[in-house]
Amino acid sequence: MPDTRYLLMATVVSAAVTWALRALPFAVLTPLRASRTVQYLGARIPAGVMVILFVYCLRDLPLPHLRAAAPLAALAVTAGLHLWRRNALLSIIGGTAVNVALASTLFAH
Image (cartoon, rainbow, N blue to C red):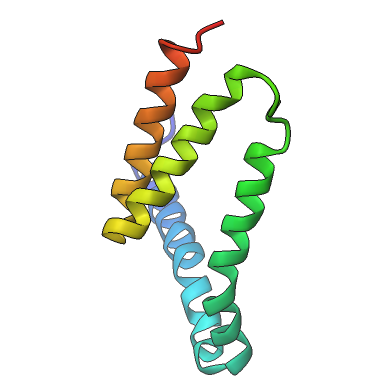
């Protein structure tokens, strides 16, 4: 069994490495916050990510089949809730609840 000094030093070294790895991104990225490019990307990327997720999630949806109704209804509820309340958490929870309820009851395989 390793002695106490070895264990203490191993703990200190691992804590220092963990702290440094967590602090390094903030130290490196701080000068970039004033960059116009980063500000532009920060304003545009969220919408682009949502479009990509939207297309990815619905790309294999069989539109002519009845089972496509649950995700489409959930999508409509999510969009409606978001336009109505402008609350992302409410929109996500509401759309997920509608999708799970419809998929597990009305449109179960």
